[in-house]
Length: 111
Length: 113
Image (cartoon, rainbow over all chains, first blue to last red; front, side):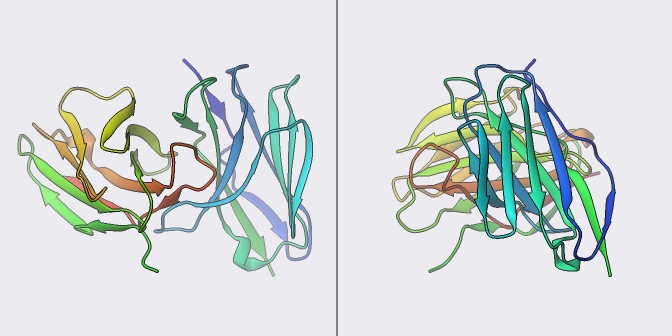
């Protein structure tokens, strides 16, 4: 059973702080990793994806991948109350396009 | 341009009934995927269709079926509904089969009583 694990939270951070969201995966064959944001009552929205070890930055968001440790994270700098949402990590099984999603981490950014 | 559209928005059915959910992808997108999201969980993959052919199937019983039409719209059918089928059903479209350009529709909330 291929698994993607996330702490359900909630993770609470003050406005302006760095929010760190973590995800581990069991399938060593997974080559790409995706982060989605889902506001309450809405559908998921793709934020970032990463294929290579190391960091990938896009605005206030940084995705970090460590394949040896089977660990991927999402950092949100200068967190805003509008970032309050559930963040989902997803990884397709090695060699396929079928993604496995984690249960998501709830982030609360308080003023 | 219009995004992914799904119909209906909400649906209430009784156990044992069947349901058909519909999805229209973004113009130019040839791949449609279906997901089930139970409250408090991440989406669970059901099917992917690309160019009208099934390209992937998740771990769901045969009660679940889908198809894609020549205009790339898609239907998800669920027979013999169970209480546990109550969930948000999400459709996602993409130009190809990868996830990097996948966009989700607003979903259909199905309640089985």
